[in-house]
Length: 299
Image 1 (tube, one colour):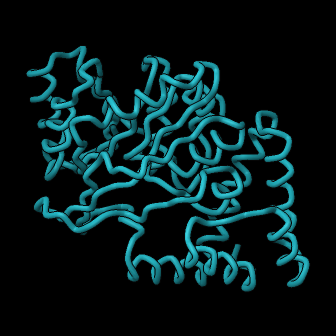
Image 2 (tube, rainbow, N blue to C red):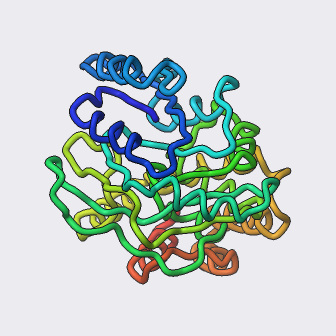
């Protein structure tokens, strides 16, 4: 778990850990310099749970993605499976049990990533609906242009964690969850998107990244396309993937090369190159946005 001035909702998330039907867990919190009551609240839980159950470390103070990567790459964190958690959500009681039931069907040497849909709740816990349900299979051609699930839903095995550690904590990437999806899919790992929400995703004014459902979110993404944010994010992801190209499957490396080359081409070559790369998003509207970004050279 990574925290930063999260005292308002942190207790709800910690309490949901304690209710897990899978009870063999340890929480490691990386705090990025909180100035509110976050650390004192964590200390209270550590006294109640014990120092072996809850560990607190200092983050790198370079943003949420760097904090999660730094925590994931720490030498003093060891387990068979790992789950990322935000500071303001609530897990369903069977979140870990369900994720581990799937992960344990995958051979240990294969990087495996569980992720899924979320139930949206308000600041006071009122149900607001659900994140989009994605039906197309997850894969590298999707991961290059879309992050299908938040890191707050992700649980992964030791092989996936070692892959992230090999890539390193110093990468300049837009988001740790998108990176995990790209990297695990790129090496041919196993990915499962759970359509049944196992997490209550709190929506509030302090969210660094909110839900991607609804027209307001679509309009925000469209504005980001026009502003060039999507282009910048792709630049960062491509550089990160190239640093791990020795681990990518041959066909996925070829897709990455086509994608990178097409982005710099003239109009018709760009459109043709993106199509030949086989890239896709999970929804009709998402694919329309992908086409628009390609036409405007914002991809």
